[in-house]
Image 1 (cartoon, rainbow, N blue to C red):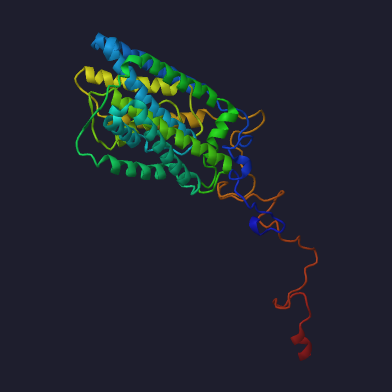
Image 2: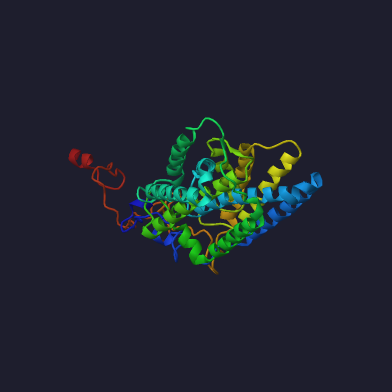
Length: 402
């Protein structure tokens, strides 16, 4: 058989799992830059949907898109946008931070309790705690090299324990009216989201940010550079979640409910995926986060205006469902184009992989089913165990009788 042939060499490494196939390292993997066209097409669809929803909201209640209510809506967009940016940043590094929702609620409770001391006096200790907590999470993910979702879920549970120490809503202390600067906040959020998407569209930046994305065995460490980038993203996402919680408290009705906040995490993850950020890491769009956040915020405002407010769990589940399909589209059509003369999916030769089927390829041409047997000679030696040739040889019994 083919695998018994002498001189046959078997590969010691499965194709696709070598360092040359590392899609997360700069200079390795598929040549060329990721295709952004699929993101732009999807973002155009998001823009059309957003315009249609804004028109419906204006027809339902024209006051919802002007005056004080517009300011409240813009602050809500920025608060949700910061959570989506936090999740999207950690998703880009393939280490999603699921603690953003509880961190936002904890920050809102802290501001509600300590706001009377002044905004700076209340925020500085909270920022220090957020940075320290982000560092602990980052060390768990990068040093122990465990999945980001698992480590951040443990961190979220710890924050929820702190939140549940309060049994009643906390009234916001002090007067911190962020609605007066609603347009400035929205403009700043839009600039950060779009410029971040443009910056991440650069091939070198995109591959550097996505170095933590698993290639081959996900338990293998991805190097020091990948660990540093991922740690920075986790700390930054925790700080962004803190700022989102500050806006939630300052834009509220006067009190903050001590809720776990996991529904906000689900909503933020769904919005980030809906905007075109891949659930596998590395890939993402340019305007997608801004458009997805605005679309979801308008949907929530429209439902409230019509007297049928939507549950964040339901909206988050719907956004997740659509976002996962967007991830499949991004991963399918966002890969670099194959170079001329190169197959998109190279097929390994021989029987060195388990993916090449049951048929075994034999070297050279085979004309029969026994190619390894030697060619028989014309003179075949007589088998001593063969039967006697009665018709050709002399009859020994007759000679003895004679």
